Amino acid sequence: MFRRRLTLSLTLLATAAVIEGLGAAAALSVAERQVQRGRVASDIHTGFVELSATKQRLRTWVAQRQQGAGADPSVRETLHNDMRRTIERLQALSSEAIELDGSAATRSEHLRRQDALAVLSASVGDLKRAVDEAEPLEAGVDAQQAWVALSGVFDRSQGRDVRQLIADSLAREAAAVVRERAAADVSLAWMRGFWLAMATTLALLAMGAAWHFARALRRPLDHLNEGARALQQGQLQHRIPLDGADEFSAVARSMNTLAAELEVHRAREVEQRHELEAQVAARTAELQQALDALRQADARRRQLFADISHELRTPTTAIRGEAEITLRGADRPADDYKAALRRIVDTSGQLAAVINDLLTMARSDIDALSLVRQPLDLAEPARDALVQASALAAVRGVSLQADAVETGRCFVLGDGQRLRQLLLILLDNAVRYSPPGSTVKLRLHADAVDDHGWCIEIRDDGIGIPAHELPQVFDRHFRGHEARRQRPDGSGLGLTIAQALARAHGGRIDLTSAPGQGTTARLSLPACDAPPRARPGQEMAA
Image (tube, rainbow, N blue to C red; front, side, top):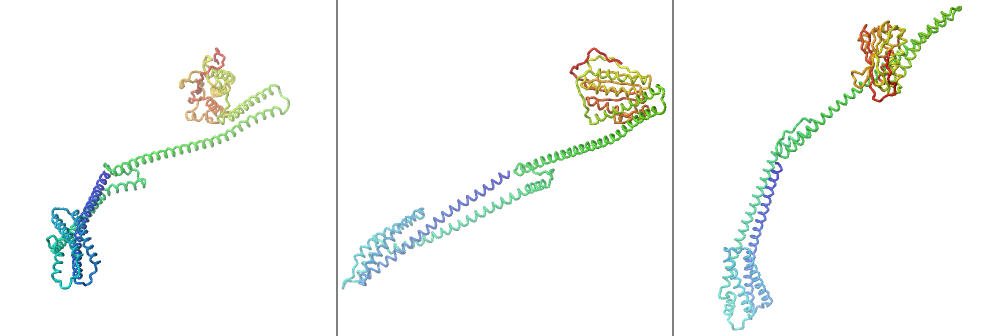
């Protein structure tokens, strides 16, 4: 819109300037023509004056010639030539005057001028012949009569009065000079007025256009400047209030779009920064938790080593003391030695159990247990663990009971020795914390939670675990109050080792228990589709 209005204004100014130029050129041409007409009229008048003066000098020369006053013939020729050239120049000027102004108003004037020039041209010819024949007067000749006769040649030609003809021509040409000068003055005055009018018109148009555009551009330019300052100051929510069809509105819409995009990018950047800060905070918290866990693990390890050293020191001291007491004094009966050796064997078994716990913890402490995993039937390590736990159960007066499971179908990917160790730990805990005469049940079945897994469930009727102690039973060397009372010699490492072995096989151990109602341990392992090299047809039994 502004472009169209600006183009229209510039076109109007350019048109006015062209009109002024054309008018000035036309006025200049008219003035130049009028000035040329005045010059030609002045030259014609001057030519008639010169012709009259030359003729008068020729008359004077003739008088001197008749009187014998020593008139020079060369002067006569010069005067004759001057008159002839003057007549020729006047004829050329007359033709030019006709070309410059051939209107009907000046036609009679041109005709009279040409007629006078024709008579004067003939008169010059007659004068030349008459003057050429002029000789000094002889004695006795009437000078008055000779002068009158010669004057007739000077004053008349073709029956017309040459003097009157020249006088009329001078008067006519003088009037023409005055007329042409007045016309030239009028043309110059008109041209000056025209130029002043056009200059005034152009000035008024320029001032009007400047005022209009200054008024029309001030508001959008102020809005654009304000918007640019807002963007420079980072106020991306600012919008330029221009919604028209002109170029400034288009620029405003572009700037508003730019501001909106920058605002979106800033919001996205802020969001990403917050997300990054949250991630950094989360990673920092995780690192802090890992550091705290490492510190706690280190503290537990220190405590574990202290407990293990204590556990090792106690049975070692007991073995040494039993041997020293037995060896003191006189010989004793063989039954006393057998009883002492039996006590030493029991204590050595306790020591071996503590050493095995220590070695197992040392191997599993790095969460990278050495496993030889291969497809196997889960019933086999379960059967072997039952066999090893039966001796301890018999000593405790606890019976073991297992549901019959067909071998060759419960496939898992695992290490048979480690799985046997894991199940033996669970069975050992169930037997040790069960009262004499109770039963520990083992059942192998499909996992109800994971459709592609197997579950071994070991249930006892022992002392149970309080609810507040369940979350801690898998911590290293943790033992509940009732567990310590029931079994003071425990190290609190069994369930920790068992959970580490279960996770190493991709499974987990879950405990459900209540004080006085027994405990149920569930070992869940993922199934394996590959057929193991097993002994089919066998069944697991207690």
